[in-house]
Length: 341
Image (cartoon, rainbow, N blue to C red; front, side, top):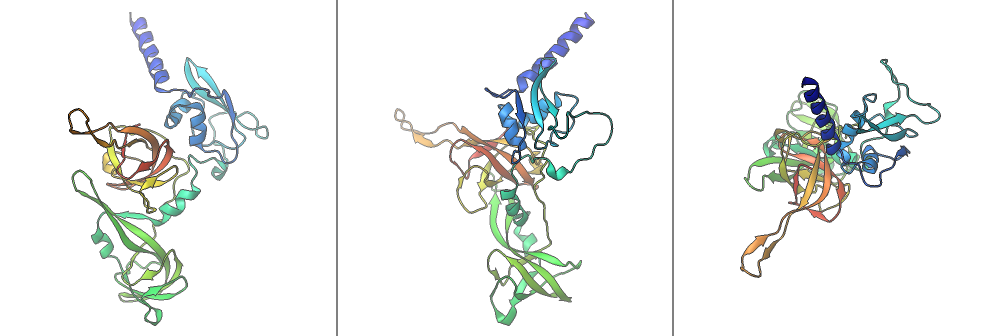
């Protein structure tokens, strides 16, 4: 009886995993990684739900790290005890990979990234979310430009006033942007600090600093604020996953200044760390259903939301986060909903 029960439990466990991972129709049996590939793109060749890549990868117990994949590697779809898995072999110059309990060294920079990062890093290096406008108002501010200029550009000498302790050699120049509130409760979620440039500290005397404006995306104005550098690029090795708990929020903003959202756009979400979000979490995007007039009753009725895409969380703050749109099968917009995939 015990053996029968154990066998049944093992069968149910295997069956549950097979059901959870859905292979894509027409998937290849083998695929050779090429330059320019991303982990998301390769996962989409094999799986109906690309974020489940770690499951199909970990189904093969010989492979530990799903992110160290290099051009020339060959991935082969196999079945181990009825479970789909991927077998990895290196390109011809490296030979078949032999896995053993020892440290193996290979330049991480050569590994393919989870997503294409070039177009997103430049945005995320500049933008910043603050808890409140008060946090920005406490920061040092631009007092004057050289020769009494009210706006300054790259290469100009400018002056600032405020608390410059501890001493730093460089600051980012910011201007208050949008204030984000929960659309349902009205709770303050955060304030966007728009990056307008960066400065190098030339000298500090008490609460006054002489600065050199070494980079500017637009004119720097009197009253703009200085914040310490916070250069957090996107990790090339996200662990793709779905949130462990139910989440539901909305797209609050498209920081590049438009209302329509498309593939590879960065969006601001009304969800953050307190909602259990982590970098690498994948969320489904639902197009908000329109409100129409019922021709029979005459009442206004909202039609159901329709799934319209996928995004991956790329940076998380306490109450807000940035997401990168990975798939969009129709035009998306601000106030579309996001929830578990």
